[in-house]
Length: 119
Image 1 (cartoon, helix red, strand yellow):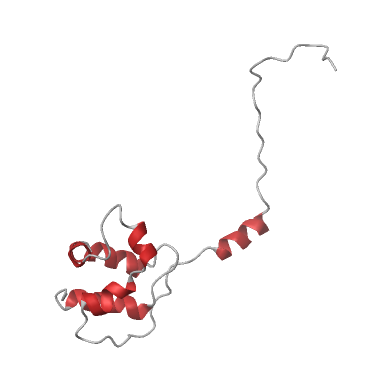
Image 2 (cartoon, helix red, strand yellow; image 1 turned 180 degrees about the vertical axis):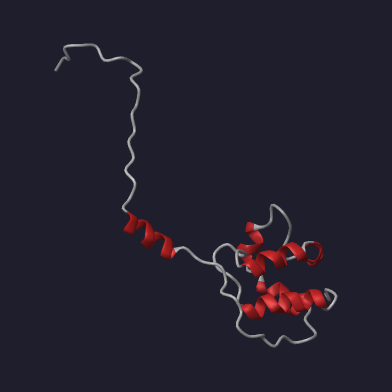
């Protein structure tokens, strides 16, 4: 079937977008992971925390892979060099990306720092 006119070769493409209803956005927002809840009590952390025994096992393979562009979470030297930054992100609850660490693990990391970063 022939058209009664020749369409332009470069006709503008018009896209329209309808915002989802507010209820749908609220449901999506409820599914998003949130930061760690504030601690209500102190967790007892052993005094002799070492990197090899206590800290290194806390970092999963996917954590190590996702941070490899910046530093190596499997490396004692790299974690020690970036310990303040790592601790700040752990305490805020936004590291690792998929879920916050339990309060006991965050305190264990801090105890490792306070203990002088033993290997």
